[in-house]
Image (spheres, rainbow, N blue to C red):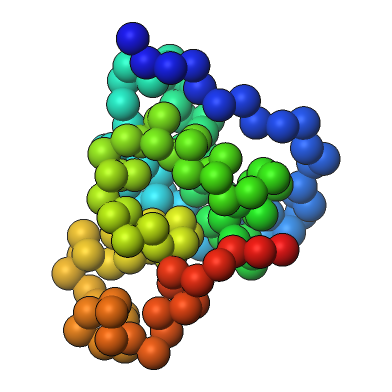
Length: 138
């Protein structure tokens, strides 16, 4: 049996108007992220409705300007990693280099479409390595 899902902390409501504006102009992006997450969901993690709510929250927060854990208003990246590992373990397992989650999700979308937006043929030799794998502090 799966461990209980991590509980999201009580957080203030986001700026709904700003979120609506971003979602209107980036609807396809949200749909692609939702599909990616749904494809990697673990049915044993919880109810389909709860999984959908977590996927929706992750996809919408991915439109933010900060690290994904910050856009979700989580206390740290560790809670986000735990959340993703619980609901989307196969996806979490693919992040073998501990890439920042938002960058990782978008890289997965690019790989699905056969696109490469990276500056180098491998992460190890890329000049943006620290942007993708560096510390995530406030």
